[in-house]
Length: 213
Image: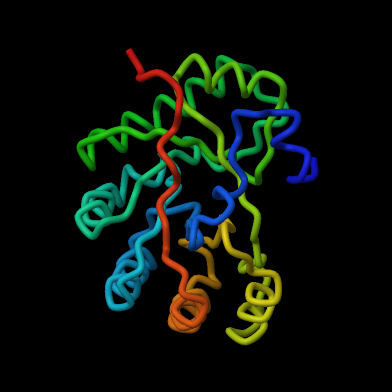
């Protein structure tokens, strides 16, 4: 499904920040990873970049302590499902279970739950909206994905990103991939570009749904 149609077909889903927001939202999927997340957090801290980490619940079992560190550095922690598997054919019950289990891990390790859910691979089905509504979550996708997992060099990755980067973009990169070191080396260029355009690195907006009970 084209991202341009998401807002029309599923009005509760977010794929861009509001117009005139003065920045971009930087997000990382698939962590935490004991090999790469500490390096990523260190790089973000040096550059004074705040971002949102969409974490996989099963990975929190061996690297959950990194969630508290990320939050202490000012980053948001959100939900990417318990296993990194597509939801295209998942039942509503299975999707709710995946989201709940991940939320439980985030609460256990970082002291608070999540508000946003990004489905693995960006795939979802007609039952996803109901599952999110019942859990008082909202769904989020992206507007800028440079396909960092397939980049062969830092320059290639940077060119993929910068040539289409626009104010209000929700940028998705990945933590725990073999190419994560390329992403980390690219971050100073992204920080410089944001400064040149007078952009801030922004959090996702607060969801407008009712609080979970």
